[in-house]
Image 1 (cartoon, one colour):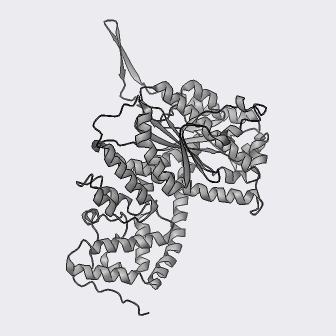
Image 2 (cartoon, rainbow, N blue to C red):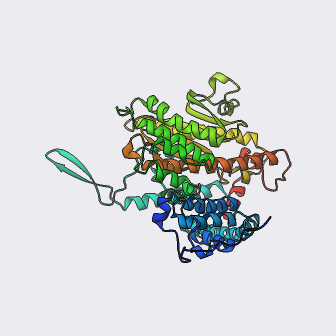
Length: 517
């Protein structure tokens, strides 16, 4: 087959670059093809350009990036003057040659290794800085239970001390009336995200490492680092930007003057299953915007059924390969973890019903959903926050028994996803087991669920949350495959097993040695 030659620039200036306006007008994926036009034909320059533009967040699949570059060029061909269309068409054909693709992927693999090493070095430096401020090796001085208790106590004292230096309110009494006024240094915490009352936190702290947006107490360095990184990624919509075409779809539908145009929404090429999910959800959102009376959040079931269920149903069927059950359903696998505790009396087992329960076919991954209705019903939302802790750790306990012969280190990579809806705020948390033998619960994404046109910008954060959830689902499939192989002996387990490290009485020597390695 005759190879296509390098296209001549013709009337296109060699110094031409894609400006923000050009990218927005043509709905191009961001951070793709930012180099000068004279270098577009060069696979090595394309790779360098991608990693120079995406230093922190990059796609590990070079084939997806390469296709994204070609997609950008094809879209440009539809939005430029006729005299340039021929050039873009030839460039697309040139880069589509198998030889050019092989060259690109070869360069990409080399550069990817370098980028990952640099990213890991930055992450280690960041975690070391945080850990160094809170915990040093010298703080672990004896191999006794008292060692870890002292560390926890020191952490609490430090948190209380730092908090006591900040006056949270000014109290003024006038004419027998008391006025509480926020001080300039007061911290206002989110009101519609998971929350734990102090007495419950005190009861849980020996077994849980919790980091919510509403958490006042300092968590472990590991939890603080994960939470901080999640916050930064959430602000920059990192998970959503990794999905080709996602930002462009939003800019040209929901966020454009053509809001509500179903024909335009359906006209977008379905480049991925996530784009298909976005189309379903946006279409349903358009319908919700036609509602003439506002939702009554005291009637939580209506909002849950009309808004929340369609979103998660679309996600589960198109992305998660999950089957959901809705409205006051029990988890049989969770129930099984309490049989021994209650001497195998099913009627006595402690089970809490779920508003939504998504489970994969192999019963190794789940999404737990609770709806607390109005934000004014604080007692209900506090109870649902506790219920999520219970149900997520019940499921992890079930998996501990299922994977008892696997590596404890591999097991700590398992994550249970939970969602809590308070009024119209949806928050995603993940629960896992740490090598310190605690349950780690971290709030990783939150969003307002948009139900009116005025809230259309919140669609960005909704899809950022779902994109993050998809990352978790994909990661957990790999982790479960690894655990399944370890469990039957097809992959050797060279470290301590789940059964030996977590399920038996864990000696303080093992935990402390792990912490100070």
